[in-house]
Amino acid sequence: MIHVTVTAKNEERAIGDCLKSLRAAIAFAEARVSERIALEVVLDECTDGTEAIARAHGAGCVVSAGGKVEAQRSGLRPGPFQVFSDADILVSEETILALCEAMFEGPEVKVAFPPKVPLPPRRSSPLAHALHVYNLRRGFSSQRTWFSGKLFAIRGWHIPTRAEVVRRMCEESAFYNFSAGMRVDDIYLSRMAWLEGGAGAVRETVRGQVQFRAPETWLGMYRYYRRMRMELERVDILFPETRHVHHRFGARKPDLLVHASASEKRVWTVFQAALGACRVAYRMERAYYERLALGVCDPWPAIQETKDLG
Image 1 (cartoon, rainbow, N blue to C red):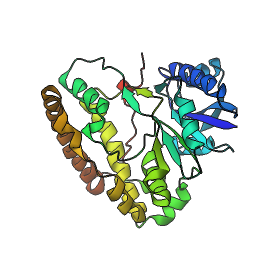
Image 2 (image 1 turned 60 degrees about the vertical axis):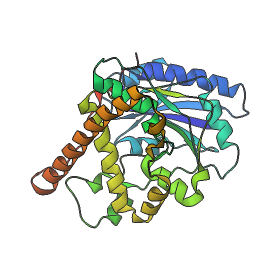
Image 3 (image 1 turned 90 degrees about the vertical axis):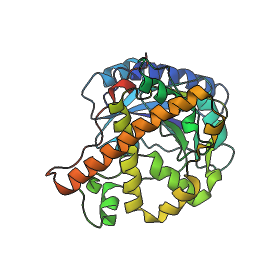
């Protein structure tokens, strides 16, 4: 049995369409592989109608708390490998089959993931267009920093628990909040897969596709940037033995920008200006929490414009 686990936190605007596309992809795959495929939703402290919509689409539901990683931990099931999915994506019909085929190629493949493509932006602003093109062109880079955590198949999923993270702490930080445990899955898992099996351990499929709604405002861009940047730094601090893996396999090379059209190069300029503002805001927020704040930083407010797939 192969288990597809959808982790969801207040995704009532997206999860219905997500589950519909996953069910079609599962049916397509089951007709072509010998394994049965089960679908389950893990509800991460949902306070909206996510559960009711999931059950209306025939999905079993499990309640979890503590963020995405803990939701994945609650959804672990026995099998040759497991598929994890976000609740705010759409998948093409052959996506689950492509993941299964990649994972069945051999045990050396630890992680498989499909290409991802942003949905057309709904806003007409220069930044919304720039963010769409940036995601469509994958950052104008031929080398991925880590696999996409939006949908992936993995063999031997393991992320340290809060207790394991706390044992690695040198000191607590109001900004990084190490005691909250691991918050992002793909950064740590990418590094560990590459550390154990090299670049061949992570496989991007040729077929299949994930569609997602990219951020379209500066605030949405900043919240996404802050999550990723913070977790990169947290993993560097907590797991210094993985730093060399990131530097070896994760260096971005904007080599595709050379061949981009003039209009896309102008778009790149808009994106870089917004990214520069994100970097400044991030440094200011980090300094605030490290020196002045009495509470701890919460880097996980919802990015609202990414939650509607319509």
